[in-house]
Image (cartoon, rainbow, N blue to C red; front, side):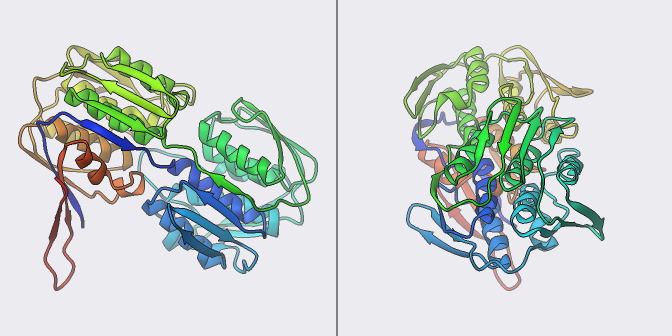
Length: 432
């Protein structure tokens, strides 16, 4: 199993480009199932979750071609199997997104209940309840969702909780439903807007994306287009936190400030100077130590839960006391035990992590428990004395494209150790 070794003590400095957003690319890949014409998707990040999704589409019968600069061409005209098996779905929550498109276009689907990071319950019942309201017959048997519908019909759907994948799944299903569907209490994330933009370019009729009420007027068919994925605001935020923690200065290319205003506001509160230009962000800490901040996670446009772990790491070495309250997922503080191993002064009170910054963290072997926790441990390693070994980094490969290479470009000392397989020895790829 691969590991990362990080030696702290160097400020991040330099320029890197931000990859396309995983959380935007996955629903757009699912949306290709809504047409039998070829789709070309640009700015696709090279991530494990993307590879899993393309393998899933290929198992169904899709023809997928990889072009230069990570452009994927997806042709679903030969689709044969409306089946998403457990062995592909178990590691990725977003795999549930194929359910709505398959049901809308083909009238049937069999999809394994999904897996993903263990960060708290993210039930799919809101997806199923919405599809049932649109006329689908759904049973859950032996860990599989089995759904059928002659043609979905419009409905007014009142989502009890704000759910990004639920909004995306039901919005995609509604594009080919008969009549006009209304989604109330819809998610407002930029990735939802990007999906709606893609669907509208394909011929859908969607209004209101970016607000809490989305109206979808069903059409008979959709057509293929070329669509470029928006930049990854969480990847950008992670590197900005890293520069803030290390007292560095970095320039990020291919990122828009409008995607991450709440994160930028907290970084400024921590003491960072941030300059925004068209598609560029520059952060400068000038060797200063960050100040602790208080954070409450919330659905967009609030502070993203996917940045909570990174700010917990920041607060662990910041001046003063900070409190970070997690209001989206109930089990998203597993990184705290690992930060404590590195000398952080943290305590958990209910769903709030309270920290008093320490002068320095100490390198230690730690274990990643989920995607964003992995990133927080890498950031902690960047400021720790000595060497930090991060195990189970398959989590981080799900959401960060070549993180060790990008950090090395910014001056970090980081290397990947490739895991042993029978008959082989571990190999080190020293990037620093």
